[in-house]
Image (cartoon, rainbow, N blue to C red; front, side):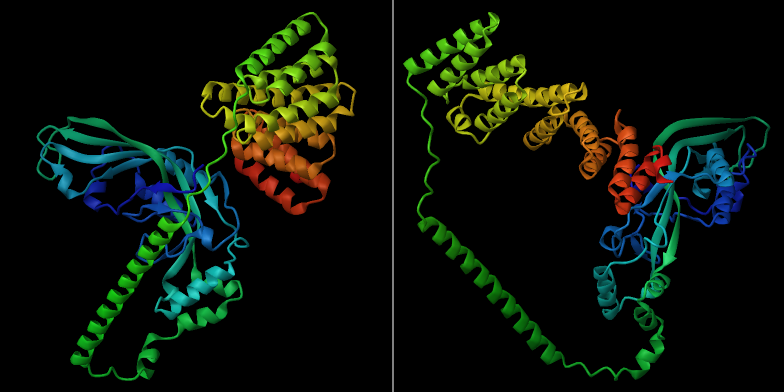
Amino acid sequence: MVSKVLVLALAALPLAAVAADRDGASGLPQLERALEGAGWQLTPERSATYTVGDIYRLGENRPVVFGTDCFSGEAREGVYTSLEVVQAMKAGGKVPLGMARLRADGMQYKQLTFAEPYVRELSDMQLAPSEACVSYLAGQQASGLDLAQLYVVQAVLSAEVKEQLCRELEAGASMLGAAVSAGVSEQCVQGSEGHVAVAFKTRAVPDLLQSTGHGELVEKASRPAAASRASAPPAPTRDRKAERQAAKAEKERVAQERLAAVQAAAAKLAEAAAAPEPEPTPVVPQPDPAVLQAAASLGRTAESLVEQGQLGEALETSREALELAPTAPDAWTHQVRIVEVAAKQGDAVTRLAEVERLAQSFGEDSAWAQANASNPEQLRGANEATEKQLRKTAFDLHVEGRKGNSALLPMAAEAYSLYLSNYPDSSKVYDVRYLYGELLYDLKDFAGAYDQFMTVVRLDPKGKHSAFCGESAIYAARESGDDARRDEACTIARTHGYDTSGCD
């Protein structure tokens, strides 16, 4: 659920227009009464956005301070359950568009309906302004800002809204929309749909400062302005000649500063032009064609040996081909073969070492990549093969370790870590982090498991593993004895509707 939502402008309606509602619906006045009864205020007209934690000045719609610059707490999100408010929002109502829209052919209005409302809010404890925020407010107060005019948005009530532009047609209607016959019909045109902030709760900034130990600012804000004016010295007589001289001096100063800036830029350009050219990146030469051909022949021999089941010979032959031409365009295929042969042999230690060598020797910063920079097809092939082998090695060692060979589990964890360091933005990273978190939990590395579980939730809160990971993070934090992390995991779980039995 987004933290910033488009605000629906809900205007005060003329009584005559409200009375024109033919359906008997109570309309938005009922919603306003329900909201006010629950302590909410309707969002004002012409507002653009409302974000929990932002600080506003009365009568203005632009924040004075953004909440992220003032409060460190994360707002709680959830479904709003006040029955009276929910019923009033779902009932919706007709919003007449004012007397200008009451025409001879009928009254124009908006038909609004709301879906299930959500609330996003900060607790009183979370509304503790940072020192930087307090310092900023103090500076603004010194510049003339009246803190008594400020308020902080503590909660925002929002919902999906469906809006239709309708016209109520009446046979023989007058210019003011008064019906002269019983025949009434409606024509509606689909309007906009969107997520809107319907109402909000606020807290006065002076009250907030007073409760958090910054009462000295409140005392300054409450001093009568008249007393300040009474003690102020009388305004001096204006010296227009002196003002003109001061303005001229200021223009000359600005001109001098600009000239100095231009001269400094010119000096830097001259310095750059005089600097020696940087040495070009050394080009890694390709081996002699005859050597490339010999390496390719060894590769074909190694493939045949694999097919014949002579894995030891295949391993040595692949290494010979790689040693003969380490920067050949297809050199990476020999290293991939070495990893696969080690896997067939069941040699986990060799497999892990060789897959790490594959990532190092054929990565984007390797000598091989420099030698083949003009061959994008080989670069892509090496990258895709490395990603697959790293992921498969980690998964295979994890599975075999769970089958009973527990010595493989730390090696699987190393392989997962190697994968994430080389492919942090892979399309498979969601599943890999889930498996890695499970493995770390089994290895009793609860802090590491917590990190992976929470990353999975952040990547996709609605993903197939996210509910499980959100719940597992609670238990991981509890096992590690980290109450702060447990509270964080519980807050996230409640936000997304996960099981929170571990929070009890």
